[in-house]
Amino acid sequence: MNEFPEGLEKRLAARGVNRRDFLKFCSLMTATLALPIRYQPKVAAALAAATRPALIWLEFQDCAGNTEALLRASRPPIEKLVLDILSVDYHETIMAPAGKQAEKSLLDSVQANKGKYLVVVEGSIPTKDNGVYCTVGGRSAMDIARQVCGSAAATISAGACSFYGGWPAAAPNPTGAVGVKDLMPGIPLLNMPGCPVNVVNLTAAVVHFLTFGALPATDQFGRPLFAYGTRIHDNCERRAHFDAGEYVQEWGDEGHRKGWCLYKMGCKGPATFHNCPTVRYNDGVSWPVGAGHGCVGCSELGFWDTMSPFYRRLPDVKGFGVEASADQIGVAVVAGVAAAFGAHGVISAIRAQRDPIAKHKDGATPVSTEDTPQAGKGA
Amino acid sequence: MLRREYIWQVPVRLTHWVNVLSIVVLSFTGYYIGNPYITVSNSEWWGVYFMGTVRYIHFLFAFIFVASLALRTYWAFAGNEWASWRNLFPFLNVEGRKSLGDAIKYYAFLRREPPEVIGHNALAGLTYMFIVALYFVQVFTGFALLGQYNPSGLWYKLTGWIFGLVSNQNIRELHHIIMYLIIVFALQHVYSAFLVDSEEGNGLMSSIFSGFKFLSKDLADRVRAKR
Ligand code: SF4
Image 1 (cartoon, chains in turn green, cyan):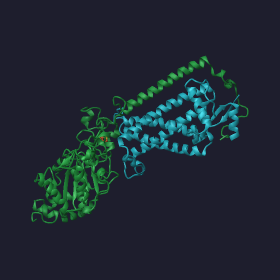
Image 2: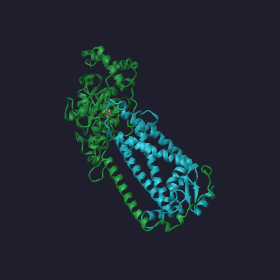
Image 3: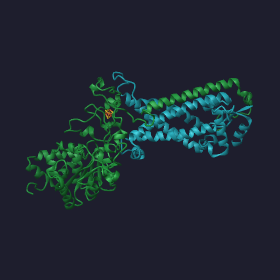
Image 4: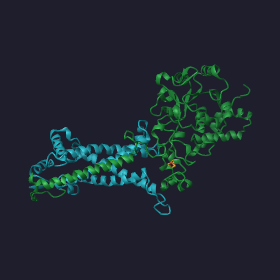
């Protein structure tokens, strides 16, 4: 184990990462966690002393997009993350062993680190027909998740699929896909949805766990507040154009070239909680709205069904033959009702002509004002 | 001989007109917020913060509307018989049910004269039951959508739980659809008021300004007996 001296700082030094870079990383993590900067020394001290907790990365019904995001991590680069901060004992995409050997290392790690290891789950878990739609080494995803997440110190669900089922769970959800929270309510779980998860946030969550020995504070969906505590729309760099009423009307028009707001192109920033505008992707280079495409709301519950159509403001109203927008239906209903009352009015007028109401009651008699109370007195 | 009687008390008329104003302003500003169809130039003084201003007006009138609803709800318990919440549920008593049937027959051209009533006719009361329910849903969804700008704030604390049950976008869609339902109600309401006012000759239209209606001797006596 000489290759891995105790404490992250020493291990990084052995790999040519100097103290300055290490402290920069700690500052980034402190900022991402939305902690006051005075916590930076605490984070640094905790990380410098941290023993490498075991990490198991499970993939179920997924596209490996979160793995791809992880592999592109630059702060810290993936090799340092894998080798130095954590001991990644099982990750199908990047691990060396294969087949039976790989499954053995999973079981070994679960047994050796019972109650102490971290699990990251990527991909949804199919539950229909006993979970036959996703099996690894002959075992169903349900089975593996129950065993591995069940005796972990904490589970992080990375990406939209392991949050609530994601794309596989989109209507009509043929495999009965669910997220970790639905399969195993009550376990220590942190939901980090997104498509994919932002690896800076994922690293920060791990750092929080190492620093404070606990998962960060969450919202009602179990998402950490540091990453999902504010709306995209409220931190968006195009917000000034939104407030000014300057909108892209079609792709490539003048407003689009000028970087105006993408609201009318169906941007779901006003409905989505995520820190994309501040943390961004790919080493802080850009993010969807920054690149000129509206947000699709990938970190929200049921996003594939409720945020679509991605290029329109509101969901379609189903059950009207062709799917129609709420506005189209609303205008049609208002027009229809107006026409109906118009027709009723015409018929009533004809009736009044032919059969005056005065014949039916003494309503035509003059009004008596005698004995009438004054305004206000009768209140 | 019709007699002029005081029926609609001040809070009834006041909240009626505040609601009218709020609904008109909220519908126009709300439609713009959902679909900003006016393109503004930021070289005009009013263009630099156009959406911001429209949203501000929308929220301002939302609060005015809520205040009006609160006053009217209070008055539904504190006001006179014709302002009471009971008018929203005419099917609860025999007289209401009869009046309901007569009103339906009148509108379906099966009966010549509309039922003569002191306050609301029963069918109108029934439409108010639906519209008041819609008002409350509209206020709730509106504050839920507003509250998202600050998830640790009061509005989100009161309303944010709904997003665990219904998605944000569907709440937004509901808020749109209810606007159209309220517009449909307004059409019906104004049309019926025209119709009944001209057929019955009871001064219904002016009563929402003055509070006075013209009633036949029987009904007028009943009003006086209540005073
Ligand atoms: S681009 Fe999207 S998130 Fe940004 S201000 Fe416009 S609507 Fe909001």
